[in-house]
Length: 330
Image (tube, rainbow, N blue to C red; front, side, top):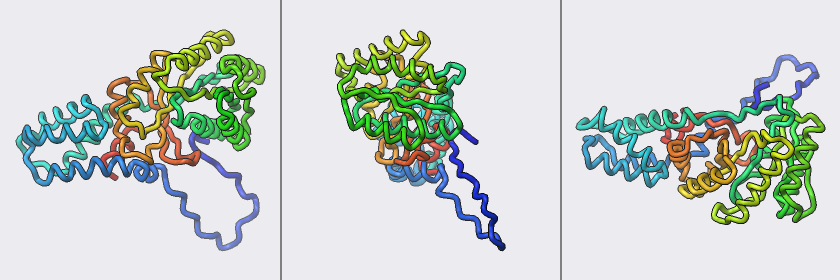
């Protein structure tokens, strides 16, 4: 079974004759991705449509397009790449919105392809330790639950550690995911030392021979130095159990924050050496273009994106599908 596929137990009861009509499969991932990015794509396609209706591609048109791409959260570097490309290939020619959207999708796909890397744990480690970090409300706990389900469905043994010891609700939420997925959940009393819990979690998961250990952490603002240093302490303590751990540090970003995502990546990367990104809540924002800007600037692997609440709505990041959906192409 594919890591990100979901199977059902086969019904052993013989089917009646004649066989029933096959039930249509639930809406596919590409359709959900396109629907989830509808707000972002509408912002772009409307702007491009307003600018380009059989218009000559001159300096003024290029400048207006660059401004539009920047306001759509694609970032200055991406905007300049796109306009330079168009200036090189189509300057002085009549272009329409479809031409611009196709060129934009191709340019974004080139930027995004190198960072589209699914999470690939080393299962020889026993456990492969994944520390999940991010600001308050970014969706860390839910992301852990969804990833845990996907790996459990693929036959892997997974332990969850409730490292957000300050919020009882976060611990309870992780316990619910543990029950859903059949994963043990390691937790302590509210207010317990998060670093101590992480230390114990690595020891317990190792003793069981688990394949994976996901460690949740308290949400923290990137400008709160004390909280960020506490996160660095968690990493130091984990290394006392396994000097190679954590093997992955996933930064979960809420897409609705737009350009503020840049400062979050900078702060967490400096403090705990972020190894990859997960972008959530793309279905609730018109700022999905920020992912392109993040890829251009930081080059960090984007492991997964989320466009809904269900476990199946978090999937590995696919560059071309994302780029085409973002500009409204089928």
